[in-house]
Each structure stands twice: as structure tokens, then as C-alpha cells.
Image (cartoon, rainbow, N blue to C red):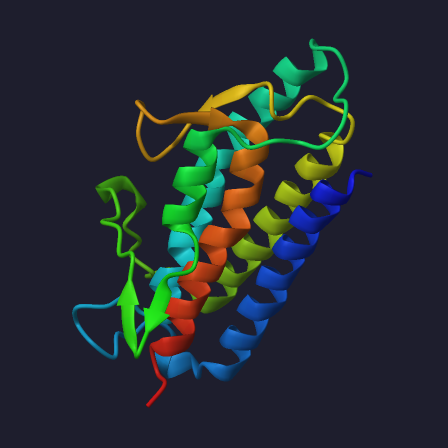
Length: 185
């Protein structure tokens, strides 16, 4: 498997382990509660990631189908500028002297409720991580950087499938950072 795809799978695995750690450290009575009414609860952060993954799965599946119709990939994958830019915007926030930079408004259809039971939200996250990892593996040898998807975050935003695969775990790390901070002093 191409090293770049192994790195994506490793990033998805890291996010899954991190989510498990955060879930274990969060008492059940705090899981769905906000510590600050202006910020999401741990449950809402993870539920948002589930909503996002659910939106990407059919787009990536379609891109894999399209890529099977193209000549095989040669050389390293390259992210086109739109995918690189969007991936930069949705990844972990930059912190300078405790100030976090790079906030992005979440579109309404991706705002979670977090009202599902903890075990359901966690099970959905794990299931989706496995599904995403399997799709990345399916993409090995395919020209993933030659097929374009429409972002679930905006119909005017388009980027290559490889960029989408890279940005998903980056976006997960951003919201796992957020989930981890919910109950930190």
C-alpha cells in the first residue's frame, strides 16, 4: 500500500484511540453536558464527527468507483490547492499564547445534538472509522488525486478524493482537541 494511504489509516486509527481515551476519561454524567453554554459538549463534538463522516462516505465511495475507470495511479498523490486549503482550514486550530486561531462556523446540517446515548455515539464513531479505513485501503493503486468530489460542507467546494481522505482525520483531531478541553480546568 502507498505510504501516503498508510499515513491516512494511521491518522484515522490515532483519532479512534484518542476518542476512546476521551470517552473513558469523561464520566457519563458529563458526556452530554456543556461546561460552557457557548461550546459543545464531548458528546456533541463526537456526534459532529459522526455526521461529517456519514456525509463523506457516499462521496468517497462514488469517487472510488470513478477512479476504477481511470488508469492506475503513478507516483505520489498530490493534493490540488482547493483540497490543501480546505484541509488546512478544518484541521487542528493554531494556538498562540492560549489564543486559538482559525475558527470556522459549522453549517447548520452539521451542528450536532449529542442527545444519543454515549455507547451509541461511540459505536457509530468506531464503525465509521473502520468504514473510512477500508475505503482508504480500497483506494490503493487508484488515481485518487484525479477524481473530484463535492464537499459536503458546500456545493461550490470541490477537491480531489485524496484530499478528502487526508482532511477527515485532520478535522477529527480538531474536534477531539475541542472535546478534550470541555472539562479541562
